[in-house]
Amino acid sequence: VNQAQLKTIAPKMSSIDERLADMDRMGVDIQAISIAPYQYYYWAEPDAGRAVSRMMNDELAEVVADNPDRFVALGTVPLQAPELAVEELTRCIKDLGFRGVEINTQVAGKEISSPEFEPFFAKAEELGILIFMHPAGFSHPQRFGNHYFLNLIGHPLESTLAIGHLIFDGVLDRHPGLKICFAHGGGYAPAYAGRM
Image (cartoon, rainbow, N blue to C red; front, side, top):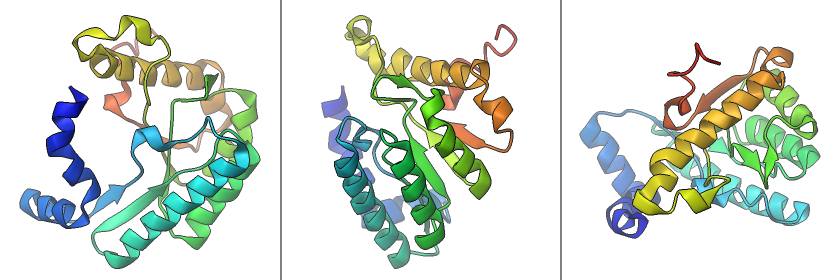
């Protein structure tokens, strides 16, 4: 399914000229751009993760600089090393002028609500920026292989799990000023808010 989709979607995701033409056609004045979800590199050694994050952020900054009236950027940070993530987050906002960051719903198998990520959330709250969370896969893929369930069910479920952990592990209580937007409409959390 992804291979078939990418024939039409890939140019829209990688060609600035095509993106601008689509925005004009749709009447969109300005758009937030970010990395593709599978480019988090949380599996990499911390220094490599920082280097890749910086490279991608610098490239995003160039696109915004070339089209300042059309694009704003959401950067990426090496969350596998929270102290480096805080450093890169600060650089993204203060030096590159980004509006926020995009992160995954988990970090190399660790829940996003794990205590080690507390400095990242504290800095994001302090800076008043947007955190956009997008899942990259699902933690139990063996049940999601057929019918493109990985994307149809798995990604929204992964977003729901992250929301649940942020709420029940107290991250949102400790950081009430966080601004978080979840991909896939927040998964199943909006429909199950009463149950939660």
